[in-house]
Image 1 (tube, one colour):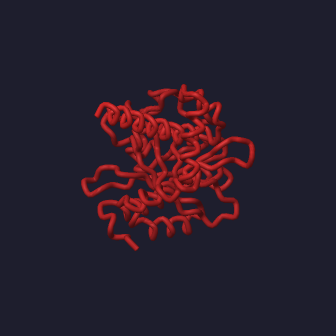
Image 2 (tube, rainbow, N blue to C red; image 1 turned 30 degrees about the vertical axis):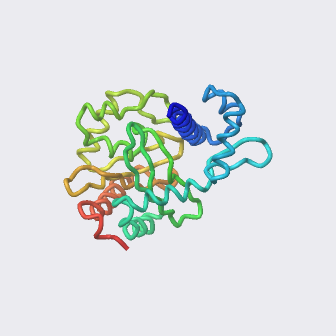
Image 3 (cartoon, helix red, strand yellow; image 1 turned 90 degrees about the vertical axis):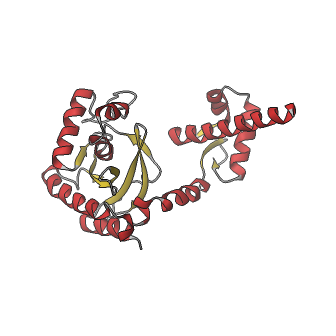
Length: 259
């Protein structure tokens, strides 16, 4: 019985370490076994065994022959199973496709994940110059239109908890203080939509509005995004109203738009 307990403990530890590897690769993009072993504070052979298991299941893949690894396509299958079960995603495609066509930009749906924003669905816009895929990406709350929308209507203690771990300046217009962020969130509540103009990345612009559940609580954010060359400040209010209207269609009754 004691041996079984030790085996179970070792199995749980291996699972924890495997998950940690996936999180490291999600943040870093790609990494080698030596670096991962150092991050986990384990022997290189242990990290190598864990990586081999993840590789066999398609959860990571090797980057050519350089001995480096990145997240694998097997995660896309798993992520698809999750997002398709979310009410806010499962019935949204008719609306998000129409919005992408109307504004000519990429449309995403995002949810709050502690003090980060997680993108759970995406419809690419028709532009020949498309922005990169945000599906599955996790980004800060304070410098994104989605993050502002997802936190603006929270009670103050929850808003404080959703603040970033650091106020690093990421782009020309990144908000770098709590006082400025609070003023911005007050404006979001007044307008009913949020804008992030070159706040997370230079030349990146986004306009978002809240998707509310049947209790009128903010459940997700609907957002359009594109380069500053196409999304001009003079158009922010009209775009905000368009995104608000689309978000309203998804609010309250997620099954209404189910395809």
